[in-house]
Image 1 (cartoon, one colour):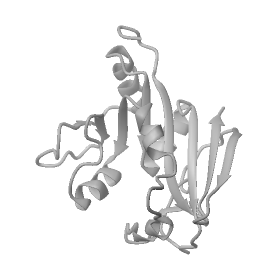
Image 2 (cartoon, rainbow, N blue to C red):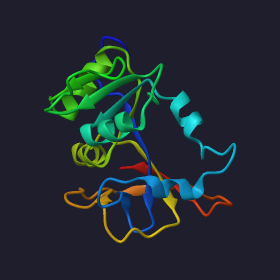
Image 3 (cartoon, rainbow, N blue to C red):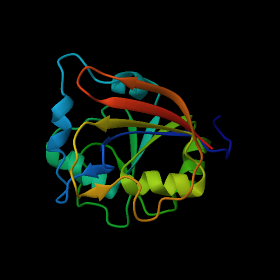
Length: 179
């Protein structure tokens, strides 16, 4: 794919509360630990093994930065933001350009599969018609309020259920093809 202007395959892999929030009202994600089980990553490592690069939003970047360490070692990370931090954590890059322009550039540089992460970026990918696959891990908790996965501007998108799986922890993971 190097040297082309086609876009890479784009997928999202995200957890949400049953009522559709990806973080609590103050950005808290401690509720995700309700499904922590020794040796169970719910397919995350397998998903990451297929990914060439990540495109994440600034909010997601800030949450990851606050956790300490860097979860994306060995992966190229592009952060969509108009306000880059004073210093990067690792070798991530910061971009204010539209998502579609960034994806075209990544494709021209040989990137074949991009993991898009963060509510704003996922909604932008849906609106631009560039999201190919969506995996949502539904955490068995109701938050009542918080940062919505799709609220506030999600575009209408047809989804085809590819697989749904229930885990002993109560997590239900649904994988969809988009479009």
